[in-house]
Image (cartoon, rainbow, N blue to C red; front, top):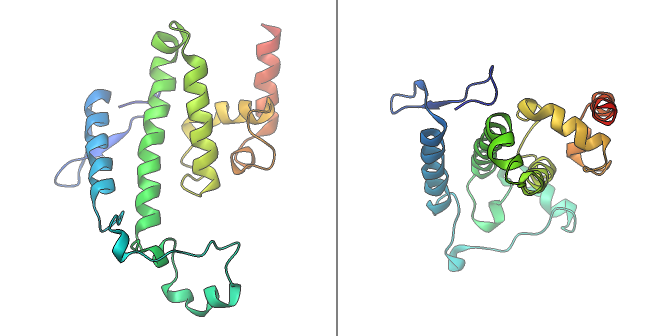
Length: 183
């Protein structure tokens, strides 16, 4: 699966070797992989009897939270495993790759030609805002879509206080805006 002419996303086969796949096969495997993770009760516990309720870190007692720093990870009080955050990051990276493919290889046809570009932009901007706010994507992860992120920071799609905005090169975004307004 590609995102433009220079970027190719590979899938790891059963021997953990990277292989190139057509986008539809990559996405099918990705959906199965994500479903498998979400349905795995050791990663996403679903038995209410085995769960505790977590304190929100902004509202919890900081001294209590710092007492067990070694055993305190995202979701620990609710029964989530230590690797929960890293699994979520991998899931979000995979979803990002699909967005990158859609934009680079299918934006004009079908999205623009069917007047669906606003829907795609809305979904992707919310995805980026959420993923960056929760530290599920890092600046290096979003590089294939950097110009769009730059543009959205410059045109006000991303609020200045958002982490997505901080990932942007505002000058580059303003330049893209100026080129667009002169054509």
